[in-house]
Length: 414
Image 1 (tube, rainbow, N blue to C red):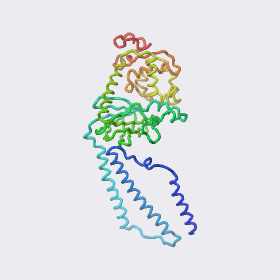
Image 2 (tube, rainbow, N blue to C red; image 1 turned 45 degrees about the horizontal axis):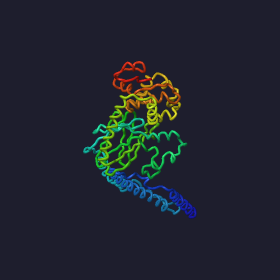
Image 3 (cartoon, helix red, strand yellow; image 1 turned 60 degrees about the vertical axis):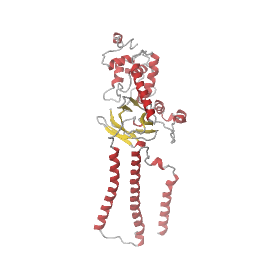
Image 4 (spheres, rainbow, N blue to C red; image 1 turned 120 degrees about the vertical axis):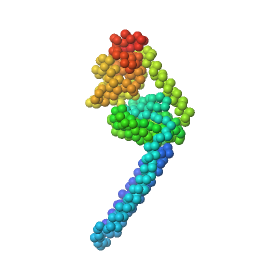
C-alpha cells in the first residue's frame, strides 16, 4: 500500500511540474494595468480579489488534501458521525459574508467612480456600424468613420496565403513589441488630448456592439436606440488599441479601435486640419471629375468599405453576399445601383452608405463597380448627381441630369 501511495505521489508531482515547461509571460495572461487612474484602480481591485480567491482556494483544497491523507481508511481512521453542528453552520455562513462585504465595498466605490462623468471637459459620440465606428466630436463639429485599415483588410482576404512579415514591414509596427499590429490598425484614429476628462456617448445603428479599450478601462455596450456613457482621462501621450467586444456579425473580428492621445497643442492642430478636410470634401461634390479619377478613388473606397463582403475580385461569397462582377445591379439600371448603395436593402446585410460615404466617394465607388470586374458599362457618375439626390432633387440618370444645369454643371452620367 505504501508503495502505491509513493507512486501516486510521484505521478502527481510530475503532473504539477508539466506546466513549468510552457513559456508565457504573466502580463500576457493577466489583466493589463492600463494608463489611466481609473484603469489602475480597476487593476488594483482585480488583483486584490484575485489574491483573496487564491487564499480561499489554497485553504479549501489544503484542508481537503490534508483530510484525504490524514484520515484515509488505510490508517484505520473511523469516519465521524456528527452532523448539524451549530458552530460549523455559523462559521461557514459568517466567514463568506465577511469576505463578500470586504470585496463589495471597494468594488462599489470603483464602479461608482467609473460612471461619474459629471465634470467631463469634452464629449465624443461613438456610433457603431457593421463593421466600423463613427466618431463625432460634439464640441468642434468634427465627424468621421474609422474602420480596418485597407491594406490589412486586403491582406486578410488572402487567408493563409498572406506573408505578414513581407506585407507589413517593421516600420508599420508602430512600437508594438508583441509582434505587430495586423488587424489592429484603422484608417482613421480617434485622437484625443491628454489631461482632459472625456465623456464617451455610445450607441449603434444596427445591432449591439461593444466599444472596448483595455488600457483605458473603458468598455461599454453600444445598443441601437440607447445612449450609454463612460469616460477616460489619459495623462501620457500614446497609442492604445481596442476592439468590438460583442459578437456583432461575420465582420466582428475586423472592427478594431485605435485611440491616439496627444498633447493639447497637437490636438488643436489636428482638429483644425480635420475641419478643413471636411470642408474640402463638401467642395469635391461641386466639381467635374474625370472618369479615370473616379475609378481610381472608387477602387480605394471599395477596398475599405465593400471588399469585406463582396471580396477583392468582386466575386462575392455564394449564399451570403452577391457578386459585383456581372451582377444585374452593377450592369443594369444605374438608378437602381445608386439606390442600392445609398439606401441599402431591407432585410439583408446590405447596409445604407448614404451616411457613411461622401458624395464623391459614393459616385467614385459606383463608377468603379460599373467599370471593374468585367462590368465595362463605361458609365461615369458625378458627385454632383449624388449631391442633388441628397438635397431632395428627384432626378434620374442619365436623361434627366442634362436638364439640371444649375445643379449639375455638366452631364452627371456619361
